[in-house]
Amino acid sequence: MLLPETFSLLLWSIMILYGSIILVFTIGLVKSPYRSGRLSTRTPGFVSVIVPVRNEEGNILRILDELCGQDFPADLLEVIVTDDFSTDDTMAIAGRYAIGHPEFPLIMVSSKGADPTVPGKKMAIERAVAKAQGEILLFTDADTFRGYHWISSMVSGFGSSGVQMVLGPVYFCHEKNLLQKIQSLEFLGLMGTTAGSAALGFPVMCNGANLAYRRDAFFQTGGFSANLQYSSGDDQFIMSSIRKHYGRGAVVFSYHSLSSVGTEPEATLAGFFNQRIRWVSKSRGYRDPVVIFVGIVTWLTHFLLLTGILTGFCFPMILSLSLLLWFVKILMEYPMVWIMIRFFERKKLPRNYVIAQVFQLVYVPLAGMLGLFLPYRWKGRKG
Image (cartoon, rainbow, N blue to C red):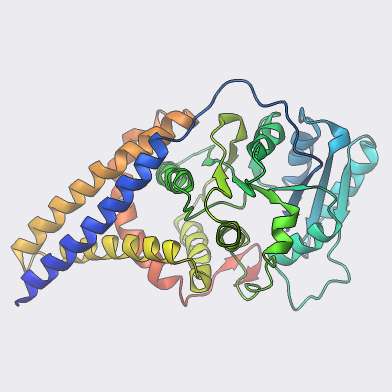
């Protein structure tokens, strides 16, 4: 078989697989129980909010104010700020906040005495979990934003005893340039995949900026012990372990808009690629066959489309087919993105949809390859 025919057959095959995945996740998203009404008044028990920090002196006061102003009962709550070897005044600022707010149940876990040869967010979380008293562990990052119903909304997802983990919605906000707007739009698609796959009982991704799980589930699945060699993945690995251990229905997505957490996208192209390479680097530790399958098909789809467009000038048939199937991909993904645009009320973003698709077509193949071997830097630390 000649090269153009072979490539066309491969591209068609991968696109059929990718289209099936997008269709299934979109159906799951459509059937998801979106809610915007009254929150459940049932409290699942004591809650520990855990905030891992590394050099967050510019954000720590704001997030502590946000957590201090939550509507959740203070007698059923503790907030744990756990340090990941910060080199600034993050912990000192948090300490002064605790003194000035004696009614606020704030606990600080220092990195002093911890093994400096095993740094990272996972170890900071493990130190916090060891001290946590909550039946529910709720996680977020210091550089995120939320409303005062956030805790109540997230923990209401544990209404069923079979639910072991709740994935919270995350969105990008405070965009100042086109790159950030493109990231925001693309991230809505990732959130759609998160919500749609969770609705089907096979979650393929989550975000550590907003998630919760039962304390018992953390210990029953072994925590992070099997994945400490990966500096990233405090969210993805524990999600896969919980789904595997407890089965379908154990991991759900919080469909309440009040559960949402916002964070700012990367301001520069270098920062963006550094972030995505860090995200991809943990993929070497994936063991969930569903996650692996979706990841490979997604990468191959973008790689083959980009290859077909770039080399198609030598093979007009390949160029025509690649452009056609790329157009089909753009149309297929839009319903999922539009659902999340409405959910997060980001209705000005669609005007950048085609630009975001062009950007995605280029960066996904690059980040997918570079993330497997290229080092990255995160908060002054090389990974």
